[in-house]
Amino acid sequence: MPLDGPPILKENLMKNSLLLGLALAVALVAPALAADRTIAMTGHGEVRAAPDMVSVTAGVTTSAATAAAALATNTARMKSVFASLEKLGVAEKNIQTVNFSVSPQYATGNNEPPRLTGYQVNNEVSVRLDDVTKLGGALDALVSAGANQMNGISFDIREPAPLLEKARTGAVADAQLRAQTYAKAAGVTLGAIQSISEGGGEVRPLRMAAPMVFAAKAVPVAAGEQSVTADVSIVWEIR
Image (cartoon, rainbow, N blue to C red; front, side, top):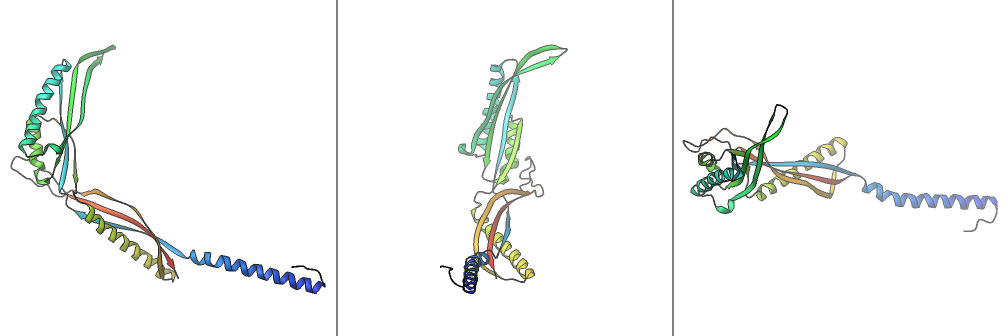
């Protein structure tokens, strides 16, 4: 717009242009400010349940003057271990070799160079039991069969999906309650949900219960509980 003319006309035109620019700026910024009126909250859900399956890592370690002798002794004991697992009714698919090693053994001392004294053979398997009540008897059977290494027991839940669904529902409810509490304290109300994102769910050991003896000779073990958890982040519009 040309600004030629009397000084008063020029001044009015400049004021009008400035006001128009401010109006346009407000019109553009207002929706952004409104959209930025949000509250973000996280929620946690947890469901506990008794495990219905268990895995144990067991094996045989043997030593001898020669690698062949150590291996022969180890093989004989491992065959006994496999036979005991078969007798317990453990399916072949539930037994997996997880470690096998042959290591030379050395003696040192008196400022002398290391001296070869023999060989050690280690053979370990992971055994999955679909019934946790069989764990005590399985441990006793493994040791009786010649296993001299027990390197871990892990309880688990065969079908965690239904429990995870409940944990997710609990996480959303937890986030909703937190958001309502903060909104009320701030004098605002929750509007529509803008976004929901999950922080990840997991199944983890929670606590160990009192020992349960499954058989007269069985090793006493505690199955405890598993904890299935879920975390969620939700953003609401506030008004």
